[in-house]
Length: 147
Image (cartoon, rainbow, N blue to C red):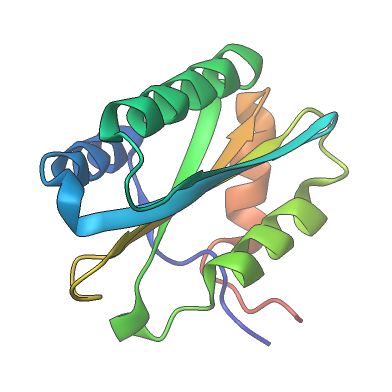
């Protein structure tokens, strides 16, 4: 059993962390993964790709998610806390929210090229209704969940 949802942060804090990573674009690469009822898409930011292009894709993905499901719960994953892996958290979020309908799960990983010390790994769980978000938090946040 693992605790998948233990480091909730506000969306404003998450946006600030993302912006900080983009202020030094040559030190990162990464990916954005979007999963919803009718979509699954992965966008990569690889060496040589424009930071502005990747940032625009992230901005558009988050804007689209907000328009479809505006009640967000954001979790930060950190290696030094011995958190579950980003893909494990993503899978758990997808599995645990299937009954809610309309939920979008977005993972964003911005990984340092020179060092993992400044890696940023976020999981956005986007709900259509605030009651869904509150229910999810009460049931799963900070609790052990069978893997």
